[in-house]
Length: 416
Image (cartoon, rainbow, N blue to C red; front, side, top):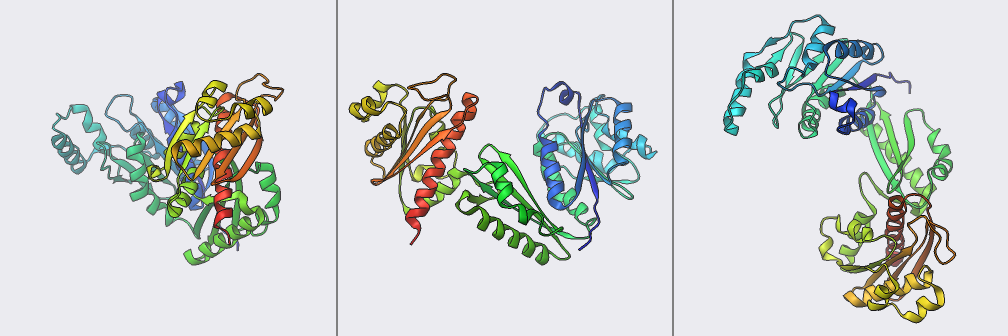
């Protein structure tokens, strides 16, 4: 099915962005949101608080994109010049809208704060623009719909995101000739190149289904965007593609959307009324942190121990003879740590990590080596890991791998 491609762009305004004082999370959010809708995002850009610069960059952007979303520069100060920049490009004169001004005054009254004269700038409007309500701030946005669609939104994400969802997104959906459905599948334990190879036929199977892979901190995401003449058709295509990806990748797929490995194991443990405890060496508490980042973790997480030294491991129940015979970094010691954690906290499951997150070899093991183990009531699983790199990268990978090992054990236990 042939489809029209509509170009889109995101433009962020603010000197603080160019200086690197803040991270531009708005651009990431909006580019992803536009892509999910079915727009072809062709440009992301940032410009400082200068009227000529804003107007110049906006003119250039309109040459490559029919839809432009601008964030920032809508405040009350002299360097908030986004409205004036848009007006200059469109050849219109902004004037104070009395209805907007009354709304801004009412908000200040409700907050018990005086409204200064410069806040009247936030009530400026041009004839071709309609105001976007801002329930969480004093700056209304602008929405222009014509040959091009331009939306101007405040910089604070807490204000921008609701305005996008409530007003801008519904307005832009009407520009699309087709409907769009999106599914994101999360995987772990398989590299991005391998994932792409396994699903290569799916990637190229249907021109109206886009399948892309993205490396994330917690694995590889397979992002599916399907288009159809109706919502039902788009949903069907996305579902069929997702099912094909699941079949191709098997147990490497652990969930959809923003779900984490900790979410998945938390759901399984809560359902089974089972509990888990941890003992960590290489990960330094990161494993317990990931588990407890999930709502409701107090139902199943009994506690955790960070035992970096041999003495600490022994003090918490790891037999000295195992460490002496096999070393601190070994599958045998990892198993002993998992069992000690399970017994110490009276949990059904013990989970452990031991390894080298630093840059020096230990016990003849190269940097980035680790062993993780799960003791599920006497059923044992271990995994050997190799992830050289920074300490933070290695620790996160070891902790995520331990969660993944537990996920697979819980799925095996649940299988008939």
